[in-house]
Length: 203
Picture 1 (cartoon, helix red, strand yellow):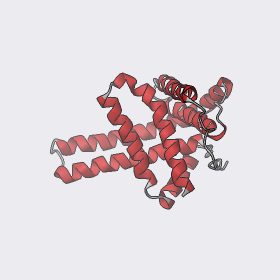
Picture 2 (cartoon, helix red, strand yellow; picture 1 turned 45 degrees about the vertical axis):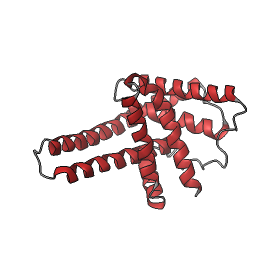
Picture 3 (cartoon, one colour; picture 1 turned 60 degrees about the vertical axis):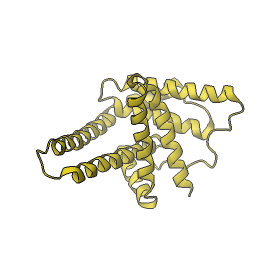
Picture 4 (tube, one colour; picture 1 turned 30 degrees about the vertical axis):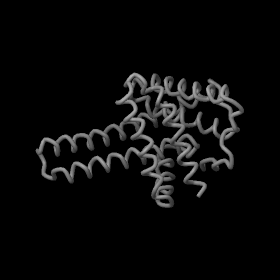
């Protein structure tokens, strides 16, 4: 199934501060629920895909999907999401392990190799952010989302660094503010990723 077209207009313009506050509250709640649904680790893929789909729906027509739709999507996405989660975790562990070994001078490379590893990890995180957006837009599965994200990266090379910046900023805020606020930031991060990708796809 082909992903939905990017809408000409995102969510309807917010009328006043109460609507803005409501949107902020909804995104914070979405982040909390997504974090709770990801607590079992292997459910993280399904949780992120469901949250991304909810944000896509909201940005298209200004309304959130109902709980039955979200629960059904989460349930259907458990198995493919678990596979995607395992792949992501293995990749993250490999990059982190490589950075630790370089830092401990167990393997050669020094500062230059460490910096390169960190930059690679940031780009991988950015690309993963694109994939999460695409799966939420209805790319038809994780493999299809990866292919769609790759095409975006080819057409708009700056999309990956931009997404990496969003993920990196969220990580920094989590560390600098309070780790306990990470679930709240998750909802805003997903929304920011959707906004970034919409901007690049309009150019």
